Length: 252
Image (cartoon, rainbow, N blue to C red; front, side, top):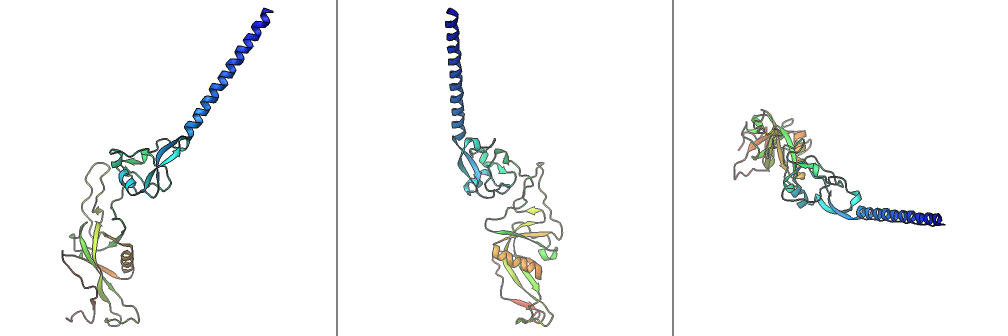
């Protein structure tokens, strides 16, 4: 009889332990599930974050924004805050819209850092010009230039040029140069810590920044005519309507 009682008591104890274990497991699973669903603030790219953009600028321009996401959906290393220290770091490569922004995507020197910084709302266009057509080596990043175009008048158009002749006029009267050859207005820091190249090769590319509509005019001029650049003085005013042709070259 005593053995039966002991066996029953042992079974009850084992049962209670089993129930307790199940309850503890269930409680832990519920806690884990709640933790997985708990919202966490992380940064997600809302637009393209170009390589070289600082974290602070990306936030200020709305290129990436803090977003609440379920914890289980947050990748390891996600950027959760932009502080004074992290705000100075720059994107190592372009970050695409919709990406979780990882802390590892920011650092001190971008990979394949862009050599020029294009002003907001403008387009960078490069023009191949020999030394004479770019005022020797005197056109440098930061210069403002006049661009002349020598072209063949359209057939049938009222032109002052003789048949088969050419005309020259000002294509663009005030253009900002942002790079000449490999030298830019805002040189990229060298990955090895050395100084960036300063000398531009003879006949180098001249890269300018223009509004999109004006950039289209320059592209057309590159494709259809011969371009020549002049270095502007401070108060220079070019005559956009003046047309010089073979027949008017020596007239007043």
